[in-house]
Length: 213
Image 1 (spheres, one colour):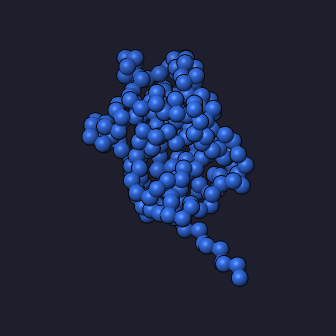
Image 2: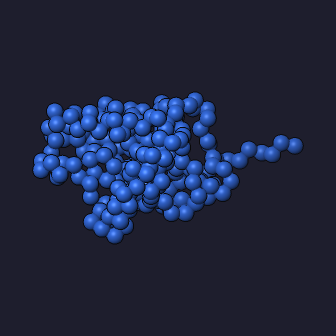
């Protein structure tokens, strides 16, 4: 597991050390070069036929506000999360392993069904002693927040992923990390921390519009 606090030999971060780490990390994590703000009316209410949509939401919290959080589907870069924003990932139905990292790695094993929409929350935690990290949190049917994401979208800025040269370079630079994270979550010490999103955890299926005569 990638744990900065352990590497530094500290049981927790002081506020000054945390701020310094964030400032040092920002150039590598300033990912807006491959994310673009768009109008909310460009959001997809339902996926293209036979596909699935996974929405990634991040609250507008002050903790780690300037820290961009990159998200992968296994070794594939799919987007970046910033405070107060959300983005959509259109994908094939079936199994996906979503990965992210800040101070520690985070992963969700998702089984998504065709023609359905799913939601994942990017959470940030901070208390009086230390920053808890940024992590991926699946919104399941058992979650108290299930049903809320549609309201979050009214307050959040929609962004889209732009697969440009910078994105490809960033993806390649993080390929070794992604392979290590995949191994640790599937076969190693991080396996107990692997979270799950099941096929039935999708939003209520949007009603199809009646055909025009």
